[in-house]
Length: 262
Image (cartoon, rainbow, N blue to C red; front, side):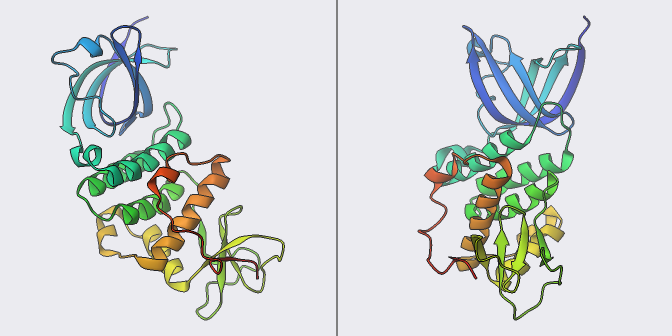
């Protein structure tokens, strides 16, 4: 069957050796979504692929597609940036690895999503620039769930549908992805308590374009609350542990008052 040639920008999400000289690489690409490609002879390459297929690298790739075959053939790779700081810092690397794991869990071959690509590139760029990685992760996950169609509803109580009101207490239900006010809380349900400040900053993140996220600030207890719900929501949504999260130690030991049943 004839192969067709394509080009796109892409981020390296995974790679492993195949045979004596080949490497299979998983990319998140701008035009083709997630794609896997075999780089023939990459382990012996002195020019085409050397130092280019590292995790998180941002590339311009040329590849060939064969009809009815999921695996494509990587022809060339031009390095835009290697995000070297990420690979040289334990804290930056572990945070970027969490983002990588979420992307690998949530995407399927051939699913095209320019928003998800731009969001991922924004996150890796900001982590590499040594912006607060915990803040970048919180902002990324808030936008990420929206991009994959599971936007948390923080605008109203998911039970009584009354809009968010200052002065009321709210918790986040990780099984439904919505807020629950104190009046509607089920005494048999474990919820994560959220302050009004945390709710408002997450709403702002949901509504702001990527180009303006740098104007938003989150820290202290609000950042901790945000990471707690975003982590637990992902575990519920994908029905699995986020393996990369534990080494990163992004969360402090649980505060007995932060998780409660009303």
